Length: 455
Image (tube, rainbow, N blue to C red; front, side):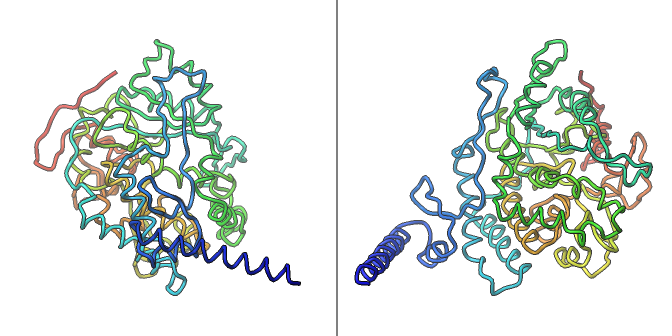
């Protein structure tokens, strides 16, 4: 009995000593004592390079070139990549969680408070550069085999999600890898081994490419066990997937059927951020583009024609289209989505496309930390769509972070929605911004120029 009492007393004394040391260290760190106590109670401590403490929800991957690969072909990434700007924005994310992580407010209010703190602070101390970039743009993409080839084929176009992976690798070679500009491609170790001979073969003329090997478990680790489990619980819940019945489009879609479809698409912003932090080509701007985007003509989508993109990268450039949801938008329940957008129920609303987006490094960092707050909060609330829903919420709630381009207008700032601009291909509304680049004829100052084609 006496020994048990002594042990209990020793544990208490030890805990008290650790806690007092913690308070002392906070008094000499960049965090306030109140922040430190909240962080201590919440857990998730990480010592930063400058001696402070920060909250970290999921570990950043450390990425190396394969042992048998030529080093010059690969981009590496570690905990120090990104320098001071990385630390500044990670600190904003940590402090926003600390200051607005209590359960006393609603989920939406918590997210808004966190993100307004990030945006306001970043703006106040000039962390976000609102100038237009000049020079080259680094193109960024990623490709993993998520299993679409295993999905059942359907005669109904709206529910036929079957795709052989060869369609993706062929499309990658024909578009992204064929582009002569600066490129960063993320892929898993299996695909890297398959692509390496193609990339190194001179007859394929693959130029200015950096490969980054990142396997899906490394991306899963960033989500963290709790957030990943929340995502999977929604995906496998018939109440979410069967909104149109068990044979409806959502129930048969990749985001419902494939375990890591949303894992990857919701991680796109981090791929862009990693490329921007490492910046292997020393460019001012970075543009994510899906690896086999149907509108990507690699001959026309080159730096010489990208003046229009640079003119609109004062913040993160995104494209969007108009949509009116009855039950859901990309799986995100309509009522909840309207609340997050701050719109009346059943409003026509903008949906940001996830196939192409980008900007300068500071814009990417700012959007990424705001995005992470929204991602984790919405999944914790039991609602889920895709990355396009999360980008749309940022466009509405934090418009200073995004420069929107309306895909429903073929002509920039046009009041017409008929896609009738002379010289535009207009294969689909999501090609509008590519038409501007490919045509190279319309600019804000009214000037025109001849488009350039490269091979």
